Image 1 (tube, one colour):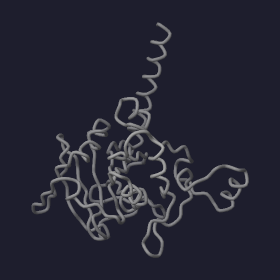
Image 2 (cartoon, rainbow, N blue to C red):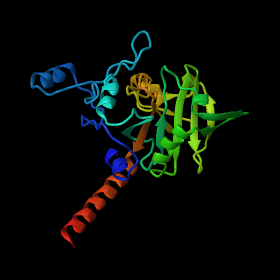
Image 3 (tube, helix red, strand yellow):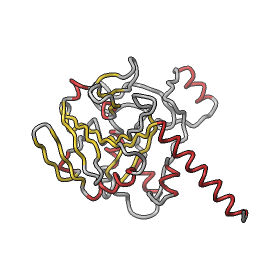
Length: 253
């Protein structure tokens, strides 16, 4: 996905994590074997699953991104205004094509007023994204006709917003402690039964990354983007076809 965005001029740079996929947890004994073999490990390139928060509610998981500012410092040019953190996920049904954009589930909580012009009428929430947020949404708009933005603005206040054709967002607010359920018992995979859709903010939505992003000069906006399996497969085939065409062009065929 990162190569796709870069190839089509949608991003300036990328940090690509090549680690163990599929969230297979490693036993402590196996983790020690990898360390003994000299395999370089860090909290972001291997899925060792521990509780997502400690006893005080602070993020504590393999998604820690303490090195974000250092990574950004290696890039030429100014600090980015927008960070798009792309992941792959399994939906709630085989042909799920809904792309999810998580904006946060743990402190520092994002607020709708910081994301654009917000209006609440009866049971509906309307959000007209500001230019920076709109830029990020436009970047992923072509991936799917169904894009949903999810965030928590507090411990008991969450938003599920669907994207319309003009990048406007409309949806509802609710208490996540009352409506979020576990998709698979024993797994950190949550969903909203009402919409039968995965729910990102319960896992913190890369809270540590957002904390670090606030230290950057432009206080980068972090979009945690989850792309379902079906769409990732389509993108992979599209990139493969591009590579074949480039090969034919280079060979003069």
